[in-house]
Amino acid sequence: MPSVRSSKFLHRSKYRAALFSLFVLGLSNNVLAAAESEANSAMLWTTLIILIVFAATAGSAVLNIAAIRQWDRNWGLVSGLPLVGLLAWSLLILAAKFVDPETHALWTLEIFAWAMINMIYMVTAMTAKRMFAKRDLENSAKP
Image 1 (spheres, rainbow, N blue to C red):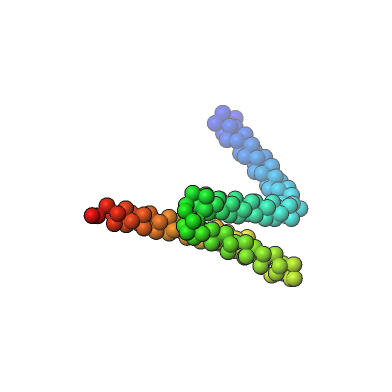
Image 2 (cartoon, rainbow, N blue to C red):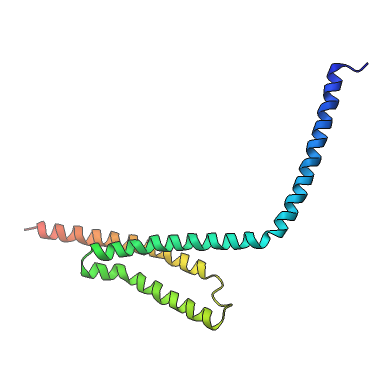
């Protein structure tokens, strides 16, 4: 007569085998479904990357626009220079894509790189502006 302990073990092993087979069947269905929806997934990732790039670019450009509005004329021109560069580069990408659709395949990376370089540029401009303002204040305070 089998003991209670061994019957529980047999019951558990059957349960585990059933779960494992369901898991394998589920994985095979998932693999087939993933293969079928690979095109949709690629389109989703492309859209997500484009949205992230545009959000980073917009955030970076807003910093320039705020500086143009708040800083005096010369410093405003300094902060507006990267926006001219972005406009020129965007027009170049659009014109090149119009002529040959295979060019600028990594245009999202190019625009994202502008956003990151612009952030470094603006931090440098803000630091320089503060240093010059501090020096001017010190020079005006001396008799």
